[in-house]
Picture 1: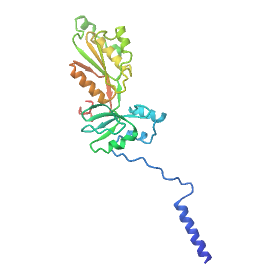
Picture 2 (picture 1 turned 45 degrees about the vertical axis):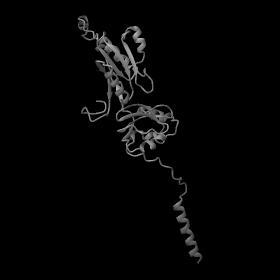
Picture 3 (picture 1 turned 180 degrees about the horizontal axis):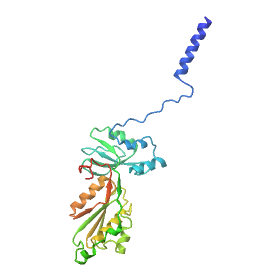
Picture 4 (picture 1 turned 180 degrees about the vertical axis):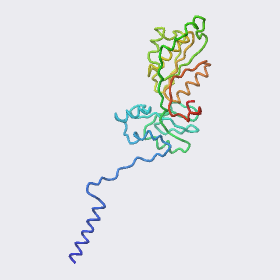
Length: 256
């Protein structure tokens, strides 16, 4: 009888140990599955706590979604305007695309809307590299003959125009024929010098033309800038930016 009792006690201890092994950690709550409509590139940020730490901030900036320590800038793809939960702000839109800033906590409420097809980071893009020597190569005979672009309006649609006002003062941009319009939701018209360099080239090429400097950052803001240029009857649009993975490459993509 004593042997049987010891055997039963041993079996009980084995079962107890297997059910709660030494050093086992309690199960951690899982990040809710937000489904395939959420851009997988955002995965490193889904477990982050607000405000974002230095590591998460670097990731957010690399993805182009940084909108401050407690907000992300994302693109919603939907056939009609989505309902915006508390904390979600609409910055810009074109049919089918809605640019918003939001806290991470607002994602589940947005994805609960069946009409929303996808929530993603803005498409990546990069300013092209130009040689300033190309601007005047072979153009002096044309200028001497009176072909200076007089009467032509040109829009430079770029990600920023740093020091544009200084360049205008120095005569690198036309003093009385340079107009600006900022489509960047973050307000940073002078985010980069690239647009200013492109504008200098255009002015060297067509010194008589009127220039419109239009700043953007995302594809939604780009579309708004282009529509503005068309609505103003601007003759030429210069867009020296390379875009990546925005479509199948047959001219039917979002940027085409």
